[in-house]
Amino acid sequence: MASYSWARKLVVYYFFIIFSCCIFSFSYGRITPNFKVRAVNLGGWLLTEGWIKPSLFDGIPNKDFLDGTGLQFKSVTVGKYLCAELGGGTIIVANRTAALGWETFKIWRINSTSFNFRVFNKEFVGVDGSGNVVAVENKPGFSETFEIVRKSDDPSRVRIKASNGFFLEVKTEELVTANNGGNGGWGDDDPSVFIMKTSGKLEGEFQITNGYGPIIAPQVMREHWKTFIVEEDFKFIASNGLNAVRIPVGWWIASDPTPPKPYVGGSLHALDNAFLWAKKYGLKVIIDLHAAPGSQNPWEHSANRDGTIEWGKTDDTIQQTVAVIDFLTARYAKNPSLYAVELINEPLAPEVSFEMVKKYYEAGYNAVRKHSSDAYVVMSNRLGSADPTELLPFASGLKGSVIDVHYYNLFSDMFNDMTVQQNLDFVFTNRSAQLNTVTQSNGPLTLVGEWVAEWQVRDATKEDYQKFAKAQLEVFGRATFGWAYWTLKNVNNHWSLEWMIKNGYIKL
Image (cartoon, rainbow, N blue to C red; front, side, top):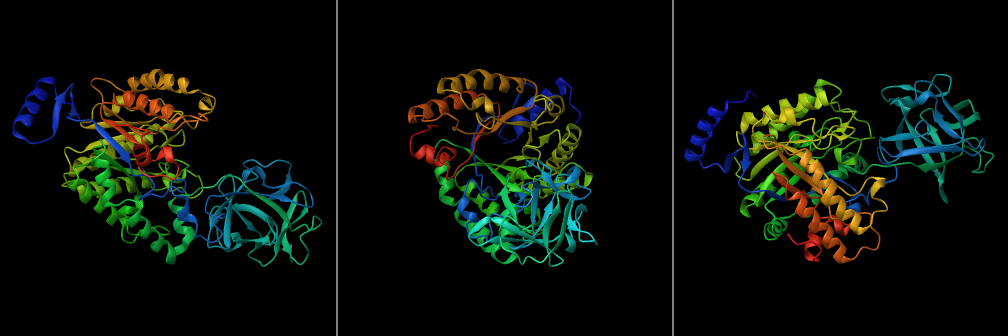
């Protein structure tokens, strides 16, 4: 968007302030809100994250075989692991003494008993015409379909049944075939027996809906949406010093009520309710596109199927995501509670390139502006190996733009042995410096869109937690747009702002 000259800006904004009822004021060449956001994330509601409410997954049959679960198989006869040679594109062997990436097979779940196995380079394990086990196909079909048969009294001891009706067996370390009848016992002399162990799993929206299947998933999800966050929660939020909610949603919400499989319709109705409740209790809403088509990071909260990042690899995923932003903004643009639209959450560098995210942010910004001239447009910094200031030159030219940063004293070994005081010092010194780096007088506003009063300190007292929360509130309160705590409800107490408030661990 072309920038006005300073003189023209002054004229335009002087006229704008006097003759409109808009909530904005002019400051340093940017739209600055008259209040700062003090928000809470409604995580785990319209976008599933299993760690927030694990019981959601309890009724899934074979729930340890969900999409994206990594499995490793050690042959009992040769004592070595199955491996996709070269990471995929050729044969499966059984000659590795340790299990890493090439020795990990990620599940694509067909139903509770049938699966595909995806290897490191994204090919699928299958059986060729000679009965040899290979990983050469980019799309799974009948030959790439398997069952896992477990020993009744030892579920880690398994056989793998191929689509030809036979079981995989290790002929030699260099030859794995699917021609065993499975008639032997479960002893260490049976070449069709493997010791199975799990290496990583995902518990997101894809896993829960595909896990329950098309009959049960709609019942489970609609009950969850109806009960996890209710009107009383909005009343609680408004009466405890907060003025906004950040609501994570998935891209399929734009296709409600009949989203593509395995997703379930109904989350749009729940979002409609959120806007009604927000209006009733005087709260603002930040719509946060947390999961984009193809997934912008490898984690469950992007609704990733198996940890593969496909978003941004093609223009199609960009156009599809822009269409979602267009849909959501058009739907709520006239609602007085709509305060901001976050274009995407936590794209991961370097898999998601700066060029692609910048291209998307420009198109997404224009999609919002097509329907709303005053909703803020929030742009998440890339995580990973990215310069935290990379968006500033671009976003500075866009009216009402906000840069979103997420700060946790977690998820890094550097925090593992920090004391209470060291954590406090890190907040006051390092986090302050990081926030200052992305805050410029004529640049975009800044939002600390996720933070939590949880850490790696063992045996911390209630007073310790109070100090930690207070320190972050002080520092993150300097963000020019505001902050949002992660999250309102969580089975892990310190991640639940509701619990923290009710039990006196945090005072807003």
